Image 1: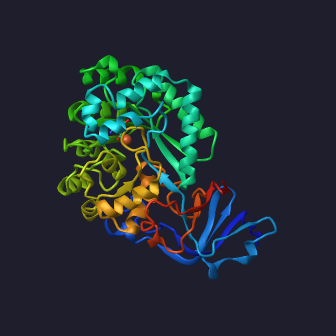
Image 2: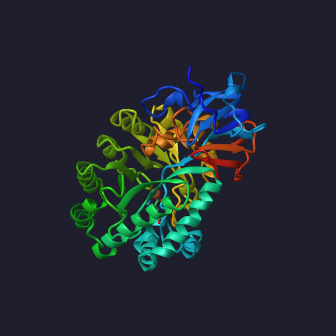
Image 3: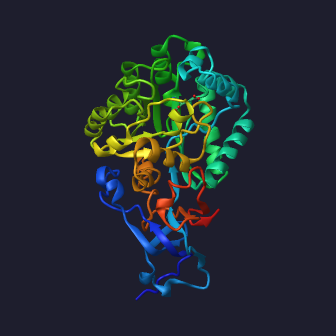
Length: 422
Ligand code: NIG
Ligand code: FE
């Protein structure tokens, strides 16, 4: 009989191991399944190199696989869970918008500021003016912040260049940021954020330009194509034509929709097979049922609860009803300089419980396995299963129910990415 190799890393005696493992295996978690995944009391996680080798209760641990070189981490009194998957950010941008925040506090709305040439367009000016080195340094600073909150995989969108050279530059900077630190980066092209300043008032012409001249050059550098479907950005018919073109070129699809109005963008994108539909604050429960059916249970609704909070908006996505309607949900910060300058995905989880009615178990699935589905990384991360990448968090609390409770706190004690303690 071959002698099994000793583990390279063993995390043992955890008060709870949140595996996030539960049926179905071939779709994101929806409905009751969002809370029926397995928790192991007094458990362990063992790794070989960069991958998870075994997960189970302590009484099943095979002590013969602990060798002299096995690194052991004692997790007594700690929750152990998969690394957080941050499935919607706008990581690379120049400057910040603290000045506009003052205007917002005095009552100006997000769309008013955008219409006056500010908002996204003011970040576009700062981004175009910034050097690659400045953009990279700022992105690395923000990634460090995400890591500190236990984020181990992160999706990032372009969208502050709005012309071919700058959009391609943003993709390059995001790739370099991924190479210089351990958090894995997934790239989305959001050239269709708003019409570029050169195309003011001509959204359809701008999308035609992107489709003809930019998308072909983005192939290989971005995996997803996203579009902001909203008043002041792009209408449903134009967005549909653009996403269809992107799909024909082999991109997977995402959409920013139903953020400020119910235009029907989520349903349109789900009909095209979008991997995720994001924001959804104005998506109704009936609309959610249609999205669930059109997306065949695979399209994930990415909820961004810190955005209505930061924009001082009363309307939050009715997440409770989405789950009950069978729509799989994920939670993200939407980190960006305009509508959410926070990297605290724990706070997003907490606000999703408080303002969207998710339970703690549902919210935990929404920042791990369902977030992985939202960026097509369910094979690699989002749960503690043999064969997945060894992205593991040790938390300061002994019980998962404390996670939505300690409002605003960062519960992360230790972060393991790809089997390495970081
Ligand atoms: O996801 N809604 C559109 N885009 C971003 C905000 C971008 C910005 O204001 O800079 C979002 O909220
Ligand atoms: Fe966004």
